[in-house]
Image 1 (cartoon, helix red, strand yellow):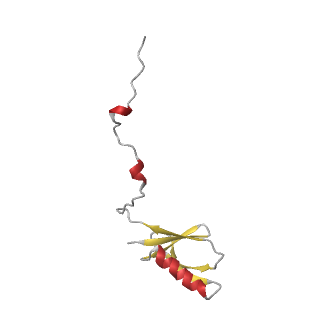
Image 2 (image 1 turned 30 degrees about the vertical axis):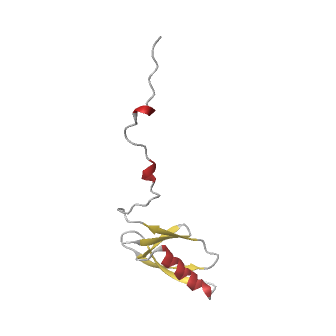
Length: 98
């Protein structure tokens, strides 16, 4: 199940079954004609508690898409890891006694 994580006032909240684009569009639409809006979210892990956030144009809100564990992205940091065994060209020879 995909969910969107919101950071609001230093606390994380979630919205189930919505992607970041949908949440952002909902906030944009809510603020189009009004000076503020109420955004229904969930708070807590495990047993979630419904919460309502007051959002205005001056409210700092971060919208984060939480990926499934099995989902990988092309920007995944794993592609930057070195191989377990270095190739022979990169192994320096040890100094010898003269």
